[in-house]
Amino acid sequence: MYKFKSKPVLPSDITSESVWLARRRYVQQAVALGLISMAAPYQAWGQERSWSVEENTRWPIDEPPTAEKHIVNYNNFYEFGLGKEDPALYAGSMRTDPWVVRIDGEVERPLELDIEQIRKLAPLEERIYRLRCVEAWSMVVPWVGFSLSVLLRQVQPTSKAKYVRFETVADHASMRGLQSRVLQWPYAEGLRIDEAMHPLTMLVLGLYGKELPNQNGAPLRLMVPWKYGFKSAKSLVRISFVEEQPVSSWMAVAPQEYGFFANVNPDVAHPRWSQASERKIGSGIFAARQATLPFNGYAEDVAHMYSSMDLRRYY
Ligand SMILES: Nc1nc2c(c(=O)[nH]1)N[C@H]1C(S)=C(S)[C@@H](COP(=O)(O)O)O[C@H]1N2
Ligand SMILES: [Mo]
Image 1: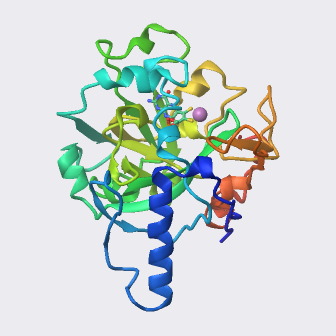
Image 2: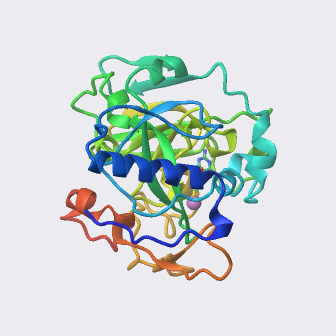
């Protein structure tokens, strides 16, 4: 598959990810020397890491992850306000425990699971995925979780199920942004079943080896790495198999700007700006913009799902 080009690590980047890089190099060298088997779970290094996770090397990104301080301080989570700093400032008041996720709709066996039950469904993996926002910036994030398909397989969808709809929490007591009418609440998203079952599609419980911070969508979010960031709904409370294509919150307010598919595509501009390049958050003000890749670099894995579709029409 496509490998992202390495970028030199600037002194300004060296924070918690230097620890991460050191560990990653060690693991790669040790594997090359036959010292350890890649299948063996390793204890994530660094003082602040709290989980032991298995590194998933199926989808490598040969590029250092964005510093943790940027990932947790520059966010889109409109339930807490429209500013990039608002989620870090205000999401602390969201209660994430207890938390129950309902899985229902066109299924034989609807389920309600709490976070502990979900966490036990599969071993946690670290996967470094790029998040490419429709606003033409990106970050490279060491997410922790596992494939969404693991969860979806628990409920046995019926033959009517064609799509999966995702609904996120809407708590007026803790979410000041719900007063705004910019979007329909609760925030809703959707995927076609084949997209939802694709092994790249991830259910995320953490980042940088720790539980998800509230501003990044605690306790449970979606991560669909070949689609624009708005598809990756945060703080999920309900996952429903449905017959009809769901209307996502962004489609509902601006259908000509935000399509259902939202596959990252440098050749299809947003009506108000180009999608050909992106600014990597934390790379410094003098850093060059980088070219945006079709399907965010995952074309080999996912392009086949859209082979018969006109991607200009189904944006
Ligand atoms: N519930 C909810 N999920 C959401 C959003 C939101 O406003 N509300 N914003 C989306 C957008 S536009 C992006 S780019 C990503 C940002 O994720 P991050 O803040 O963890 O980087 O979350 C997505 N998920
Ligand atoms: Mo976004």
